[in-house]
Image (cartoon, rainbow over all chains, first blue to last red; front, side, top):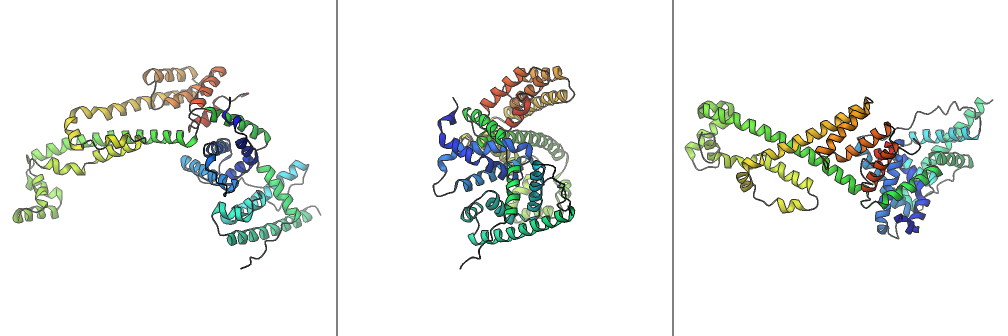
Length: 177
Length: 276
């Protein structure tokens, strides 16, 4: 009988945050081939130490800390530098969307390329806020930053992102007449 | 101080980020698969990545230390032999140039002044003097390596029990008996490595039976050897390639039950995947 079947709280936590852990590990540079193992490693640690989760700490802040450690262990163990994002098609020449899936893939590529251009400090704040939906105080706690720094980075990152979105739209107009 | 408000994202920007989030996610199939695998790992009595990985790293450190200790021992033995030959063959005055001018001068000064700490150094160079070995002992590399190896291998606390054993007494009492031990450990490991390497090369060359035979020899000679885990992973991989998938998967399942968080568990999981 599986141990965790008796632990509905853990099961619920897993359901809530599996995607979050996966995406964060990916953003922390864990290579695709290691994402399965790394994600499981995080939840094994979570299961073992779930009693240590304090009520005053946001779940995702705690998970982020564990994920960061697992990713760091992985990098140390394999002597690998952070994975570079895949070479992307130039946003200046968007492929004509043949169907909805292709359009979504192109949109995801555009965001990846944008994130690649952001510096690390802004990137993680932007990701945690606008992709993962964390609040500014949660992000401040997670990344051990001053709250004003979080707001400042988020404001800058959003501004740059909106500018990139506007350029993309303009290029698409030109490309499609 | 009031912070300037952060502007909200436009709908177009939110849509792009939504597409990115979906593309970056693992997908429901992966989540279910992870859940099943996670249950297996947590069911295993020794579940825990850091614990098993810690053991694995301790093993690696231990092996490295053993090899280094063996090498240093060999160097020391050779060095002492050469030193004994050269000391008996040379007069102190002939040795002085090899020690550098300053030390030779220091030796003469000590003889004039007497009683200073450098006296021992000067006397140590004299053939047949009784003190040199004792005076040299603290600077020998071997004891510190032994202590380090004991500390690295015995995280559970046995190092604290073993370490107080008097170094000098141990080296005197077991000077003859202790020397072969590192050499034996080193040669065992070398033999283990050779068999594992043989099996790996056989696997790469598609010589499955030869690979399995090498692993069989390893299992017979070193049933609980340092590289026993590597042997099990290789065996599962070879069995899978040989089409003996049921055996391979049984091996993998047993391994993952026992070493759920092992650094080799990922490789073992991929050794013979279901439906592969």
